[in-house]
Structure formats: C-alpha cells, structure tokens
Image 1 (cartoon, rainbow, N blue to C red):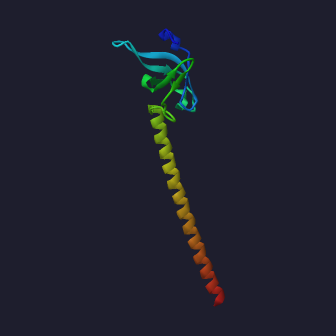
Image 2 (cartoon, rainbow, N blue to C red; image 1 turned 180 degrees about the vertical axis):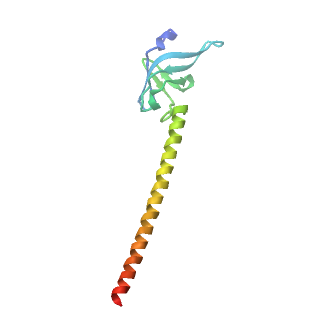
Image 3 (tube, helix red, strand yellow; image 1 turned 90 degrees about the vertical axis):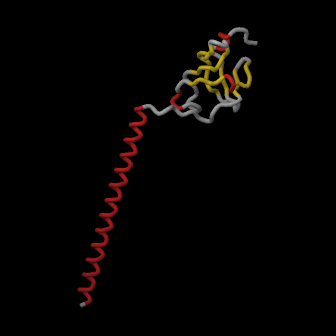
Length: 131
C-alpha cells in the first residue's frame, strides 16, 4: 500500500493491454485541492509515444495502483504536436513531391510526343515503301 506521494516516483506504468508505458518521473498536483492530477512520464515507450516525448497521464486514466500502475485507458499512439521544424519540413516535402510529380508529368508528355512523332515517321516511311 502506498503511504506517501513519493512512493509513486519510479513506479512502472502499464496500459490495460500490458504494454509498458514507462516509469513515473514526477506527479502533476493541483495545489488548491492537493490532489494528484496526473503522472509525468519522461522517455515513454516509443511504440506508444512518438519520439518518446514526455507525457502527462491524467489520474482519471488509472485503473489500479499497487506494485505497478495499470491504466484503464491510454491512446493507441500519441503523436507529438507539430513543431515549426516539422511544419516546415512537411511543407518542403509536399513541395518536393509536387515538383517531382510535375517533372514526371512533363517527362511523360515528352515521351508521348516523341512516341507519336516516331509513329508518324514510321507510317510516312511505310507509305513511301508502298509507292
């Protein structure tokens, strides 16, 4: 049985599917009511949290506390909020893809015209041979 808040620190946290989320590094406490609002997990499982970025798990998601903490809910995967670097990288990638698609379309049109010109030349050459 936990007797002090500090007993939470270092405890392993698991999802209701038995997947390790990580260890409690700190607690989020509402100072007026002096109640635990959440568990702070730094370096969580990268299978659950993008780039293992720190997360705060609301206390209401806890199902059981004993030797370990078992959550009754945790999202399948937590994505990080877009940072300015990620937004600009995404925009650059979108621009690169658009440029590649445009370049590919130009190459296909050029190949199509070249094929049509070759076909006309072959037809013209074939007509000359018949005459």
